[in-house]
Image (tube, rainbow, N blue to C red; front, side, top):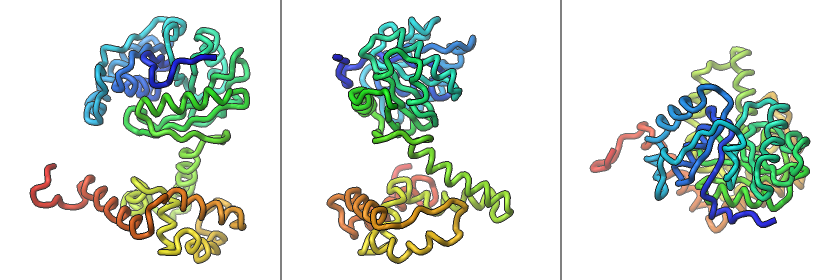
Length: 321
């Protein structure tokens, strides 16, 4: 098995050209790749063209790679033509398990054996999708966030039949293609970010259904509250700062009992020694060389930057819009 080096990839195939697949195509074009695309819808080419035209001003602001151009897109008549010379394949078909299984098996049969094939699925484990492929070892999940040309995150994970080289290769390729990559150690339905979003979403629905908060209240509670911090510092480090100089250890010791309080409809895990240590050690790893004062300064300046960037703080004298 001798796949091309991830940083040497020049041609990518996008199979499925809806909102997600089209967003991937826009991203890969902006990064200077040649892109072939296929979608069975009769208006796929026109729809994809409109999506890329609409996305291009945004990717220009993000910065184009050398040679990047929408003209490097080719829409093919068949799936086989789309992947014939592809060095990487991104599948973005609708979220229907049998459809995913059949399509991944077709892609496996039509693509050179050393080419990694990634699925944009937002929830299905690769173990469930790779069951009918003849060569499932190079099938991985590459779960993006919408729109893929704008949101950096992609979560990479294999299935039970996926070989480790394919996961490592996909993570390296996405990194070379300008994405922010989380390489997951194990499969998890919904992956990481979707599960966190879903927990927040379900609690929001509960509050609206019970008349406890309005939609406007809920949105403002995030945009004017924790969302300002989450833009640059995730919930774990944010909570660690709530513990002051004692960090996550003090926060857990002080606020840990509130896990049993009815603040959410979700059941809380048992805060045993193993979980406590995992959280404390994890925050220490995430902080790295930054001490408490460094993190406080980073948080404070970050919130100010977000408020100013979103027009909620006046610009300083002489500052350009």
